[in-house]
Length: 489
Image 1 (cartoon, helix red, strand yellow):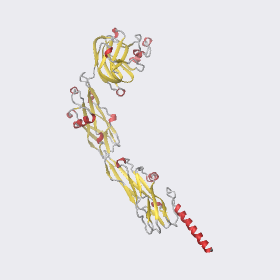
Image 2: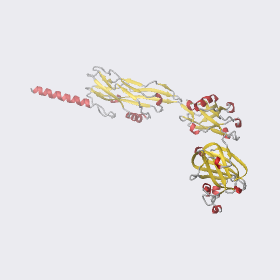
Image 3: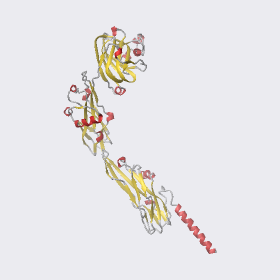
Image 4: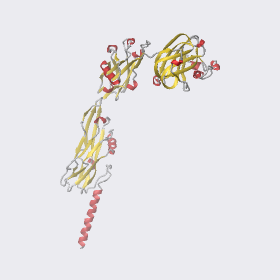
């Protein structure tokens, strides 16, 4: 009886030890300094510690190298195990930062990965698991663009079985994806300006067609000096019209010289211009014109054009927009009476003198106090403004305070017939154009004689925030007393 009790106690002790050994396998897996005791006869480990893949991207997102990314490997034991041993594995992205610190690398984490057969069994009497863990990247290879590369650590997390330990020196396998990206050159559309407006009806042709600006950019810094050659390619006109729903005409390619642009080493962008050699006044087709400037050749190391942005389109808009004088304001449209947001940002004469500044100091300020310019936005005939003297042209810009659509007419009134107008040039600009220092020409009214009320009808509605007038006085000076706009609303 006594021997039976002793035997039972020994069995319970070994059972307790066995349980203790099994639960101890779930230790802190990030503790690289931890060592197991020498009592375990078998150490489980991963034999293949690094799996390398390489993918290369062209400048146009084409991928070469690996078709798919999949790794499979078993686990091993240093000796044949005396019983079945289970080994569990998992992805641990925390080890990416550890690896980068230890090796001076900059690998990124990989997402969109799947793990199959994460629990492996080493059968009794064997030194290798009967099956393999499988890790697959399920995302798109085109999304792996970082040239630092990507790292996926897969490690042994725990085990089950007697007389077993983890070999801490060989418990992690790394999937490495090294990425190379070919540099590419492309047109930066946001920082290029290629819109030109001509008005053949008025004989107005934009001289800026001789200085068309564009900006080229590169995906990465240029390794060494690189030469880009650009040429006009009219074979692209038809496709452009099809995509844009336009009927633009081609300008002869012979009217443009090829353009060379040099990227210095270390640069990521460069600006350039190209010019039209022909006679602008011959471009009278009211459908307008388009000039496709294409990157045709690149001389540099490992660099290509980005096909999606290899062409810059310069547009020539032809407009017959014009203005005419009418005898009655009833022909202009609906009068806009709320002028509370209006202001005058610029007032000058043809000598370049700033009249806003000149008329705000003595002796003029005694008669016309500060803010006198805004008198033209008040009702009544008492308030008026001397705007030009000694027969000089008046250059006045009026800010409407916000963009106004469907402007169909304008009225400028002088206080007396003796200080009236005989001609006026009209320009208009949206906020964006004004910020860029640009405006559109709406026509010229020439009356010849004195005109106290200049009623201007625009041939088609325009959208503008800024209106600019160059006024020719009928005598020595112009005195403006009223200003209104009219809309088609």
